[in-house]
Structures are given as C-alpha cells and as structure tokens.
Length: 385
Ligand SMILES: [Fe+2]
Image (cartoon, rainbow, N blue to C red; front, side):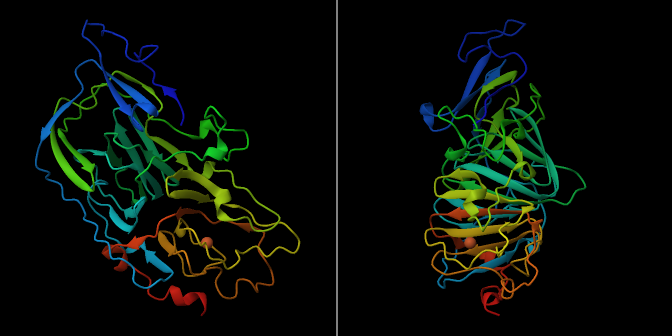
C-alpha cells in the first residue's frame, strides 16, 4: 500500500502530544487494518473524534437473497436492466456471493444523505459510466469513468455522484483485505520496476478538512447487517492525517498489459488480490504476435476458480452477445471458450480494444434472486450454437 502524508498540521510521528494554534488538544483517531499488526492511518482532530449513539436507520438497504445454484451453468447477467435510483449506499444490488466476495452493481442517482462505514470488508468499485467524489475524513477523492475506487474497510465515507451524469458502477466487497499482488512488490512493499503500474498511477484524497456538512447519520455494516447511529460532532473535523490506509483511485487505463507470442492466461492481468479473489484488468493491447498464433482464448476449464467477467465495452471478438455492463459467470468444473466460429476466423485480429474487469474466485459463487431476474437465459447454450 502506498504511503502519503497529507499537507497540513501533522506531527512527524503519530501519537505525540500536540495542540492547535488556539491551544486546544489535538486528538488522534487510529484506523487499523489487521489490528495493530497491519497498516494503519492516523486522523488528527482539533476536537474529540465524533461520538455516536444508536439510532433507527431511515435508509432502506437492499437485502441480498441468495439462491444456491442447483444446475452448473455458464451464466450471463445484463446489469444494465437494473433500475437506477437512490444513493450509492442504498442502491447497490448484490448479484453473486460467496464467503470471500460479493459482486454487485449500482446506478446511483443522488448523493448519499448519510455517512457509511463498512466494517465487513474492503470495497472496490469500477466506474463503467459517470463519476463523482468520494468524501471521507481523508478529504475529497474525485473519480471518473474507467476508474477503480477503493474504500478500505471501516473508512467512514459517502459518495457524491456527479450531477446530471448517468452512473453505472461495478461493486466488489471482499471479506479479507484487498492488496496489490505480492509479485509486483519488493521485500519492503514498494512496487517493482516490472509491475504493471507505478505509484504515481494511484490517486489519494485531496485533504479538505476540517469541515462540517451537517450530516449526523452514520450507517455501519457489520455481519451483513446495517446499524444506524446518530453522530455528535462532524466526522470531518480533521486537521490532518498520516499513514497507509486511505481510499484511492486507480484508472484501469493506467494498467500496462502484458502480451505473449501465444495466448497468456488471464492472471497475467492481475491488478488486485484478496483472500479467495483475484481482480484482473483487460485493457486495449496488441494480440498474440506469433505468425501462427490464433489470438482467441482456448476452450478451457478453470478447475480451481469460478470466473467472473464484467464487460466495460462490447469489443470482444471471441464472444458475441455481450455488452457494456454485462457480467458473465463461468463456474469451475465446466469448460468455456470462444464463440463458435471465432477459432475459424481466416483473418485473425492483431489488436483488441476490449476493456473488462475479471474476477477469479476460489469458492463457488451463488447468484442472488436479483441476478436471476436479469439473466440472459440463452447464454449457456450459446457456446455450442
Ligand atoms: Fe476463462
């Protein structure tokens, strides 16, 4: 994870006694990942960090009803058919679920009217359409189409989608910590020269505190249940911060793809990893360059993972019938591959404009009832049509 010290009044090391210019004690708030053994960030308040008391939640959150799959099928869901509406916290729809990860989708149409802290896991959004700002005690984090937006577990925040823009975001929630793949980092955690992105590709929040936007409701998610709290004091009453846990943005276009003489397996596009899950980025690139290469994937069965592919455009020569915002799920145990006819193409393409987010999951995924409502019923049979 990247380290960043916010501009402002932060001490050289955390947990030093300090006072504001007017003599007030500056209180520290510690946000830790993996307890005191892992990465952390310190938030500095001129006043005591916000306090909260239990309160009824006015917001209605979407419940996920999981429907265990009884028939092993390649499945395809058209997320664009989901209704738009409400804020990012309330409006998300879970589609595929296992013990490690939730895959969902949302089309937020307005700002969150309360703050959220997800104590169940790290979250990663991929912005298919739209953009906006993530507001947190760390500051303002602007994002746009094509960005990954990472919100660490427990970070208090709310989303402010850009007004007037159509919004469509992929949502991933991980039970374990999201991190950059170990293979890209050296022994002290820095990105290596052959990593597919660099430190400068990651954007941190622009610190904007202290501020008070007069929102006193906090929704905390823990063990799958939302708990309401009424805040006393602004959660944005922060004069600086320091540390290594904070929201960040990574544009998918910053990912530098690898290309081989012949087909390289998708994990070569690994971008983030979490226990039981691997997130890969497919971006425009030259295709396999051996003179005899057939630049479409071979039919295959990933025997150890369920594969999810979220299409950010429809430029997939190996698969017809997909569209921006559609999501395929190929369970372990049965084969999948190019569309019938793709292998026989007499003029293989040299370049692909495809953009997609792939997710490999160790544990089997089950669809939710909402997913079954937007399923493309003919998808499984399309592999042999
Ligand atoms: Fe695959």
